[in-house]
Length: 219
Image (cartoon, rainbow, N blue to C red; front, top):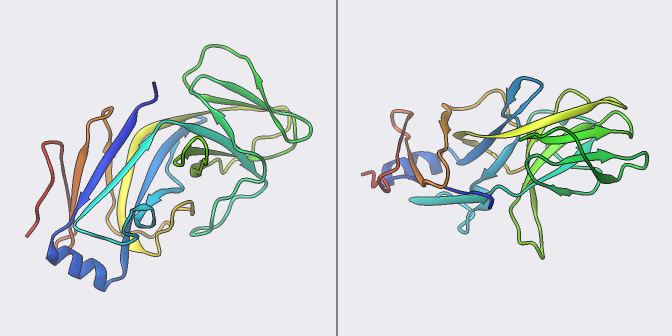
């Protein structure tokens, strides 16, 4: 069964005053390993995904390991939206899929693996990894990674989603856009299965704190 992860960002009145005044919202990115490198280059979730659509004192984000693949012919610039040009292909860790000569996905096979594996029989593409955040009936796919190195015709690639996350606050942080190089202080954390983790960004001192014992109640 796919693992479901939950984090909560807790902020006090002082923090909210500072963050709201700066027009900041929060962003979360997830790491993917490919070709021996770990990359965190797409905003997976942000304040725009919460029920309130803005920062509150307790902000909960949750997702399940339901992955999907797509591809693009270009890599967007910083802050631009990542969009697939093909169809989204749901995929499980260890699966192999090829892109055929028409750009369609087809299941194939290969050695035992814990990654998402792609064989490219189409043309030069940049592979996109996403997580399904909608329902099975009405799926929504949030990209978490785009390979900035093109996968050439006849080549294969392997993509391993990691539970390393990054959190930060900033202006205009929007889901499914490329991470910008200039960011406020970032919190890096490796999740441990379904254990809920609580985070607090003390805005006045720019210090991140985290714990698993329960929510923060900042002053």
